[in-house]
Length: 269
Length: 344
Ligand SMILES: Nc1ncnc2c1ncn2[C@@H]1O[C@H](COP(=O)(O)OP(=O)(O)O)[C@@H](O)[C@H]1O
Ligand SMILES: [Mg+2]
Image (cartoon, rainbow over all chains, first blue to last red; front, side, top):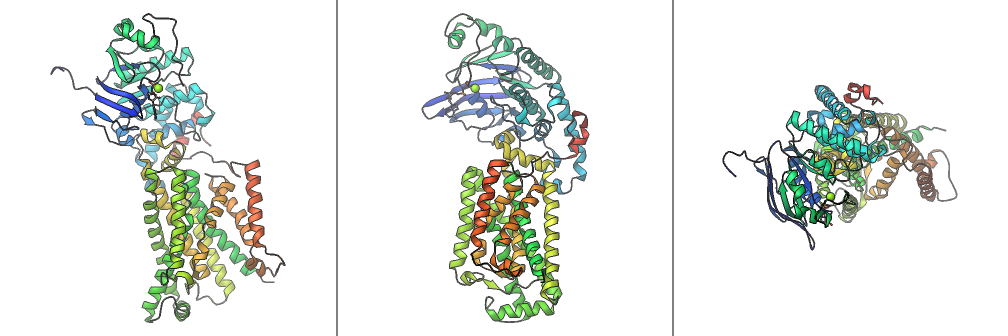
């Protein structure tokens, strides 16, 4: 890296994770610059979701380094990583199912001063913070077309709405780096395009850095600056979408053929 | 027939059970912490009272008697009768101390939750409760040990006549139970209460949103255990006696049933559940029925277990969610964004 290049926001080096005999992530090395939008693709079981779990502290790596904003993340508990500004979504949404849309959003409020036990007993000084959180929650819900879902329990939402609510909730957590695991899965194609447009606008307006897993390559390639391709836990390719789309090894790994066949979504569990 | 003893017994037990059930609702109903050691924290309150009162009253009265002897018990009863403020002061001291000890032990015993799943936490707490009880029963000299310890004088000893004294005490218990209700309602309808539910629904999701969920659990266990210990103090000063047989883990499950019956998460439902369970509990005890002048030719104790069993089956069949649904967390947020239709 030359001196002129800024220090990357995320630096991953030699990251490895084994589950029994399987090496799910195998010596991964890559960086993500501040403000960049990076797409992450790869066939089923190539280690994408595991990588997210390692970055967010949900799983502990067997080897390698993760640096975020100059700090090593390895060994930190998930809540500390989130507070540093690295927030993730899950492939299968993990909502607070017995709570409504508004409550789901409010839980994500970062550094809420009224969230302590003492504040519960004497809420007076913290009412304004709570009101402010509510306004932010309403803003995000509206931005994701979920205003009408605010009073509904998360368990009452459709699959697509759950996915949207999880993305909105992650954004409510004020991420500096947002990891999204197939944010458009289960969402109608027209709406999927809308989600990516929204993410693009967010990045422009708020300077959020994004790392996004997505199987609909056409959708992804329209928006991201760079694509990482995983295959069997290893980094197969790293480059701008245009180059990746031409890369024979990627096509081979992804489709088993060296040409763009009929577009398919990885049949995902 | 004088129904005063009956009313006193019913109201006092209802109040004590209500405090226990509300604390269980905070832990299990709202945070998902299966505190199967509830009776242990209850006994902590009772034994703290027994320890403090048995030693301090003798010291303050200048009597050198064996604390658990019958003479010492009589001495304490007499002292409480002649020195009302001393008796009331000691009672208050016990409430405060027991709450502190309960809170400390509760947060300490929440630490297994850092490592193990809920089922194991439940088992660990259940085992702690049983070991503590068996230990005391087998240890001569530990606050009464196998024989129990009497002479924990009612703070209203100075009131002449068991009836008025009992009513005064029942009123006090009810007032404290009302205070516990206000406390748990406040906690529930706050951002902290929202976080408790989030921990219950999906702890990992809360963690990756930056929430220190272990700390939430430790605090909930501290509050819940402090409440249980307060209930234990109220029990000890009511029966004026502590003994291990009163702290069987069956009580934990009775309290759990009050919560499930009422509707886990809903405190108003838990009040109803506690009322129903207290009625079943009281009206199937020969000692309680004797207050009504009833003497049955059969052992009514068995009816309690049968009734609870039938109730449980009916509950599972017809209202698995309990009498009252949980409801939303009410904070200032709801009125702020009323336009979303969230005010409820
Ligand atoms: N918790 C786990 N325990 C055991 N194996 C796992 C676990 N999580 C993932 N794996 C395995 O690791 C590999 C990578 O999985 P994953 O990261 O989910 O892939 P992707 O998200 O790219 O589809 C797969 O072989 C999967 O079966
Ligand atoms: Mg995956």
